[in-house]
Length: 299
Image 1: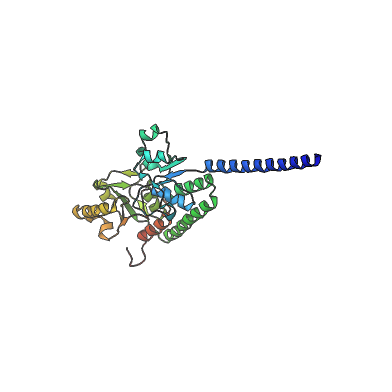
Image 2: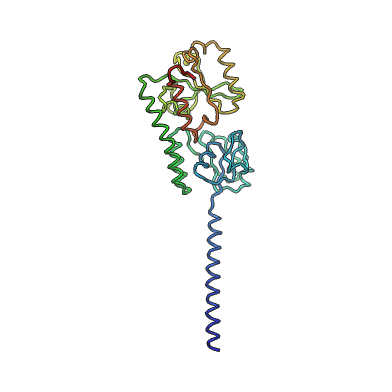
């Protein structure tokens, strides 16, 4: 009998041990699931960064841009400039990402729902690289982050090599089209202004703190840009015809060197946007080609 009780005690001990281990494993898995980030990206640029870092998203912006396949069935949360606070709240996010240039779009409705978006600074290529590194570290994606940053670095080296081959830097005017409301001038503080500087161009309008400024015909005539870049990142089907009509109807434009020598270029998505994104390497190469075209090629 003693032997039977001893065996039963051993069996009971084993069962309890296995049960405890199983319970701990289930608890660990549940804790792991609870710590899994629920990330919402409210702009296409943030979606691109998330894709490069292989991050899961529970919400993406409503956009005409083609989203990466992995996010094709993810919930849409509205346009970047007017996201739906109700939809975002229903997804129970752990973090909501936007960009600093859209900070004013997130008002009282978000505060009332106790949602505090995190604004990424994507106003320059260097800020983009810093953001990629920071997010890579935060979400244990350092290898992916390094690969993405190295791709941008390689393109910067290439365009810098081209710039060094030329003594003079072309004077560049950057315009950002506004659907139904004309255009603004993009300064050196804007993302496209940063691309121009990296590609070896001299922005004819600079500022210490403004990304964009109101146009001034007399100042534009005095600057006499050799290259004009027209950014149509929102509703290009409206903005590009708007630009063409403006350049045709206002005789001021015909006095500029850029127009006389047919060096006016339209910047559209996906390569160009108002904020830095993962198409920066391609954008840099395109602008470099426009600033320093090969002989006989001014396209």
